Image (cartoon, rainbow, N blue to C red):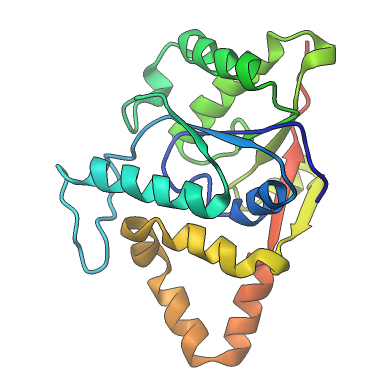
Length: 226
């Protein structure tokens, strides 16, 4: 991975920056690319409380914030910006106001790449709303100054609709670092991936299949229509 001017990540929840993307981020930061993360919410309405549960509805925001900070350290991100939006309500916010905040950061850090979800293909309403606001913010810049948007799609049929991804990064060389970033989100990881961990531990063939999938990260370039 070559060094870029700056990498800006814009995601709504703690763990969005790591699940499915951590390896790519680490490849960039290890190459010397400075990185900034804008996180929209603290994921305070998330259902997962750990396995076994160790969080409560009241403690979850602070726990997820601390997990996010740990993940940033694992990813090599030393600039974290919190928008303070309410989890599961981003779609009801004024997109222009959110775009204002994102645009301010873009103009400050001058990224060559912005990483976010692919609008309308993020599955979660917060994913789509924040990615759409991100596109609005980038579109405000002159064409010659716009960063490239690396968009990740969550929908299973993304390749059928969007075509093959523009980038499929092999992150096998930073696999352990990627898993460390994912596991930093303990409250979410253990609930979501405990079965996967058990399968990997009990069956070498399954472990190889899962690792082969985890070492590939896919992104589409989002082309802005003026």
